[in-house]
Amino acid sequence: MYNGKARAYTNIALIKYWGKKDQELILPMNNSLSLTLDAFHTETSVHFSPDYTKDSFYLDDLEQDAKATTKVSRFLDLARKKAGISYCACVKSQNFVPTAAGLASSASGLAALTGACNDALQLGLSDKELSQLARRGSGSACRSIFGGFVEWEKGDSDETSFAQKIPSNNWEEDLAMIFILINDQKKEVSSRDGMQLTVETSAYYDSWLETTAKDIQTAKEAILQQDFQALGEVTESNGLKMHATTLAAVPPFTYWSPDSLRAMNTVRRIRKNGLSCYFTMDAGPNVKVLCQKKDVSAILTELQKEFEEEQLTCAYAGKGLKSLEMEVSK
Image (cartoon, rainbow, N blue to C red; front, side):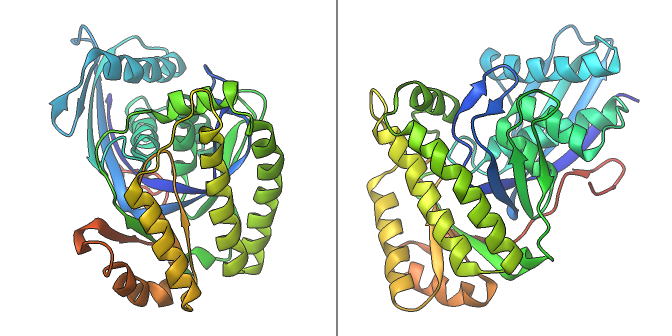
């Protein structure tokens, strides 16, 4: 009765979420817009039992340390409160994406845990409520509840901050994203720590907030008009602005590596030579290349001149949260 299992896919923000105005509720400083992708996902099961004396958390079959387990326990407390139970739980999560390497594993991981808890405790949450709950575990997880293009409304309270699908007439089916895996190791500065330092100290942060509000509208209009160039340009610009804020933090830091710069320059060269593609980066060194499906083969051929084939992974539009017990798509 208290078992649940779910799968959620990673999402990559085209217009970034960078900075919180409420640490506990995870309320963002700005709206963000993402594309859910099919290449990386997390499957998570949860079992609540009166026989357990403490929560346990296994990631890729390895029991996690107290810090990671405490984070999961705090999230489980939210689900337990909704269900009116106090049972401890065993959480087992399998990541089909490198963890903490800037590939949004926390988004898919916490979204999957949200779905598993919803099933196990028979919470009966709507997609909006699932998004609100997932946000409490990891901000970007609220977007992985949905497939395709998704906007996270920043809101000003627990009830008003949630994600929702953006009408697109299925245009995302014509698009692709190529991942250039520069480094799949754990990053030195976590997203959580990096964005907080940036909010508190970066001289560029106010300008980031001002321009990102405009970027959201530009991106939504591009999606409505199915204008790939407009979407690509604002995606690339917004990502660079986010990373600029980290260089103006005190002390300054960056998620870029020399190979990140090489990847960005390679994308610029490919675009200059006539293939329409644009890059973006999250809080990690890996570079993502937004392109159209029809150009994937030609772009991969060009990228393979600079990077090993195993460093390149192509993703297409992904689906929303899925229950693996009931086989019901969210």
